[in-house]
Image 1 (cartoon, rainbow, N blue to C red):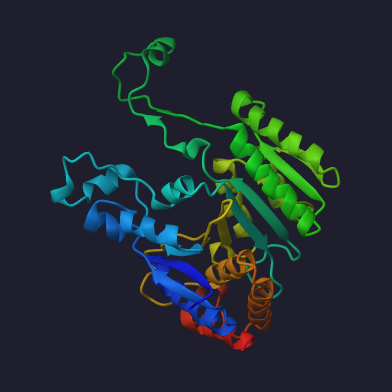
Image 2 (cartoon, helix red, strand yellow):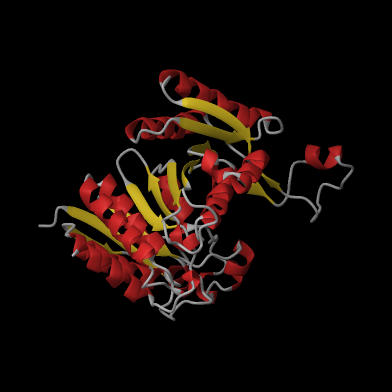
Length: 364
């Protein structure tokens, strides 16, 4: 019997392609795992009217962790327009499968490392090594939106109650979730010898919500006096990341800000093809490349699988197979530095599987 049970969620778009490359690497690493296939995403929406069917949820509950590829995402209005006729009129609503998993399994930590591997032609500056801790379950992504808002909102703006020209989204921040993500960041810093955490916020404007977030972070900082805490507004953080990314170590922030900063940092080190991520809770986690389904190149076999492979390294580390995780990352670094195998986003002509085999070859 395999030591680990991993829910395997290729999804659609380039998801199945990059996950095939990941399996080649994981098999070469010798990870003792059973990969249990699950259904998720756009194809399930078209077939079942549900991006995350119940049988997949049950599969996730039986697994030690999950590995995810990519899914097509569309605005709710567009998604509803493509909902098969047999599901219409049944109160079905479109929702993101990933957000539902994060909330249902309380995966409060989104961990996004951004590292400039030597030899990567996409690096804007050598030596970048930033780790982003993004709260993953609430904020503006809590899902509370109203296309028709309360009378008081309209009255204050001199508008009629029923108007198509206003809508409201609620930003929810709790002390519990803020403490969870702060604790994860400070414990990571201590474990990995990091010295500084920047808490990124906009408390000068979002006084109640970011004020609560900062209060929880400061409390956690007092429990970890060896780690220096600095605070920075989100707009200044984006500016400084472009001007001098080397002065950043760990970034700790809320959901939407973390989403934006993560992609900005990925752009500093070659793009989303080099952006792994992990969604981590107390006892369960989901690992995924940060890129989307990339429909423009899906099926062509040219997607860069490095983000997915590095996510697999993170998964191995989380499972306690730390040497395997380090070996996978080192193999990626070797292939990038050698420069013989490069996918089109790196200026080369190699395929997804050629990159996967090259990394696996280093492990063997």
